Amino acid sequence: MRGLLIAAITIWVGIAPVSAHEEKIVNLKTAPPDHQVEAVGYCRGIYEVKLKDGSVRQFREFDLAFKTVSGPNGPKPGVPTRIKAGRTIGDISFVIFSGLEEMKTLTQQTC
Image (tube, rainbow, N blue to C red; front, top):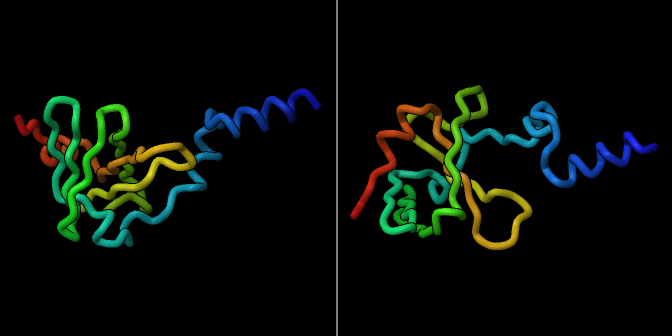
C-alpha cells in the first residue's frame, strides 16, 4: 500500500519515470500554424516567440522552456513547435525543436 501511495504521489508531482512521461507526447509534426515557431528573440528577461500565423507571444524567462524531440513524434526539421506546459497556472510554454543546432540558429539576442 505504501509503495502504491508513493507511486501515485510521484506521478501527481510530475517526477514519474521517463517512460510514463513519454506516453503523453503528441505528434508535433501536425501542429497548426498558430503553434509553429518562426523565431525566438530574447531581450531583458523577455522571450518573444514569432509564430507562423503571424502572431507574436511574449514570455518571461521563467515561463518559457526549450526542449528537443528528435524522434518520430518530434517537430519537422525547421519547424519548431510551441505547446503549453500542461496543467500549470499562468502562461507557461515549451518551444520544442527537432535538434540542438536548430535551437541555436532560431534563438537570438534581440537587444
